[in-house]
Image (cartoon, rainbow, N blue to C red; front, side, top):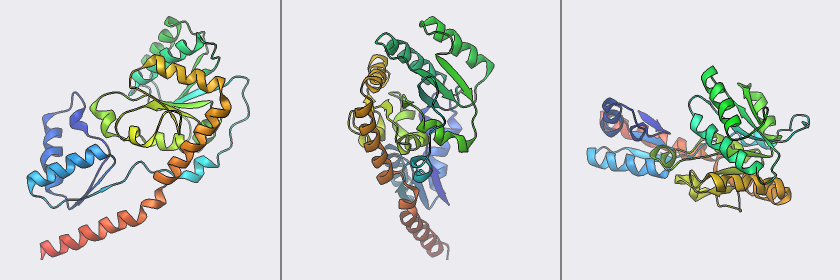
Length: 276
């Protein structure tokens, strides 16, 4: 068994003691190997394996991206308005969308005219909440577009046509242990990314170098990044290109074929020896 771990659910409020038991005992007691997505998860798995005296071989593989698909995407025909984009399940990440709406409202006070497009599924309840919050913070109708679910093949063009791609993270265990897939895809698209300095993201991205990176939950700083992108598009494009290079060097899936193959061979060999 090789266990893949890209989230650490015991760190999320509301999960059961059974989930904690699985992570802290059973999953790694029965495994020969583990593929983990972040440094913090790697540390935890190695610590659990040592406590259980289980010879789990650990390989850290970050989010993987089909780089060329996003790099080569052509933007959809020019709209009469420009937009920032957030992609995801609005119901599951409503706090993220609400945070971005508040940041958008703050940016409007500094003359940033762009809209927010939200792609992904949403419920009637989330739609009503988004509409109510947008009006509450002074945004006009149509400033926030719930675009709904889009085919996978449409996403690269939507990314390519955006002014920037948004990914707020939080100072919590979930953000510290994960590395969102959409971060890799955002960077691959060659558009400027605005995110938060948490976990492995803080190691990979530097503010003003290959992304716009602010402290988690700092809405004013997040809004200032939107304003800067609107006011300095040439600098934003240079930062976006550096982010794209970061993605190619760190997230291109083909770079991890040999390390993963080595893990599979090592685990299979060890299992055969111990089972004879």
